[in-house]
Length: 347
Ligand SMILES: Cc1cc2nc3c(=O)[nH]c(=O)nc-3n(C[C@H](O)[C@H](O)[C@H](O)COP(=O)(O)O)c2cc1C
Picture: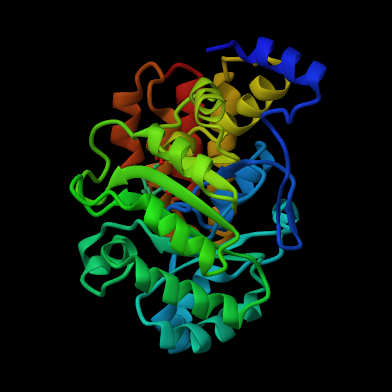
């Protein structure tokens, strides 16, 4: 495989598309093809704002139940709130990810979602949480691609914004149906498809099978976004260069490391990037993230929910195991700040 620099020089000469480029979907222009993947419990407005600031071109809300939206559940619709803060002004567009299995609930659900001005609606067909599977939603839909088609048709009939789909490769290794699902998605009006090329049974085990991304890209006309095992900028380069996919979504690799976005864009557009993130920059980012979370949900809840992010921000730092013992007890912003100050002073 060519190095990013060779690839860049070659594509500049031939005028071919470079690896970073906008993605156009039915009137929506996403300025670049490196996205933050939807992650339940993580991709709230504060984390999204941090990732956008660090270079992600597009983000998704946490998934919401279309059934709960149809019932006007405030608790669910709250996930779609985008409060106005100075730090949140980069989020001019956002994808709303829904899950559900009843086409007849799409219309009332989307009517509620429309109040939050989504830039696109993404249908989740990859979630493998038993509670979701039991309702026939998420990855359970992969067992019945026709039903996915019905869901997509119901969504496209109800909304003018682009409709997209996120899938796994199939239910299990004996039922790999990503191509069939892809064709159905295209026929049913989807504007883009994302694949996390593992099966529902595989959950997160083994390696993501990027050849499924390549095959889907070769067979479909709509843009294909790849997801799975993108932990470094080099991983993103390899996925784009070897599968030919139109863009990527980074998930676990962005938790505690939103810098992966700016590093990736640098690598893809300039051929190299600064590998070391200064410790102070990392910890400043973590505190910034905490302050934004506090602004949204109040200090008590934010401090508890930020523990997982803080553990990720500090993972791999010298003494991080010791630091984690304090993180899991942190209850106030002061706890976090003094922990960081003590750490930086080598206490
Ligand atoms: C904590 C967590 C929550 C996730 N929640 C969602 C979700 O709500 N919707 C979705 O489509 N995928 C979800 N995913 C899957 C990711 O979007 C992504 O496809 C998968 O993690 C593979 O990418 P990665 O190897 O970069 O993590 C989640 C993944 C993680 C780790």
